[in-house]
Image (cartoon, rainbow, N blue to C red; front, side, top):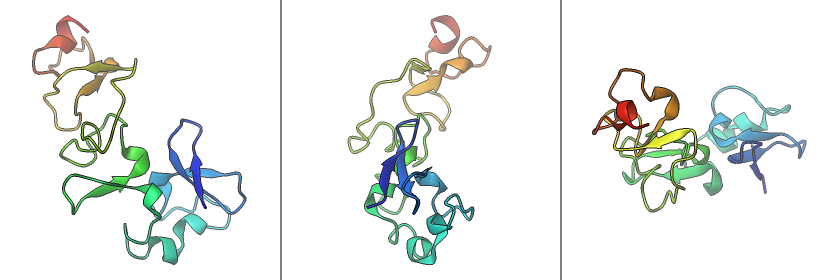
Length: 134
């Protein structure tokens, strides 16, 4: 079993050394992050996502789309339909303290925007709450 949790509490892949935990999205990215390159082996990366262990994959609402498990609940619309952020299968917690809850106007966000975008003179939320309340 190679399941592990990265230091920032995300799903990861355990290298052969049984110490190094590589974030799921670093697996099969054409960069060897494990000392022996096991995160890039053909048997793991040959037929994505089918060749990956299930814990590394999150299936989007659109059955033809998937993202790496560590991209679920990261605040970004990685699936394209927000199913990795707001879908029932994603089961994401509410916006964290670094995020502002609103209905974003840009497709890259789903139900929260980064607080660094608050009061920057640009509308990111439908009701302008990012400019007047946040």
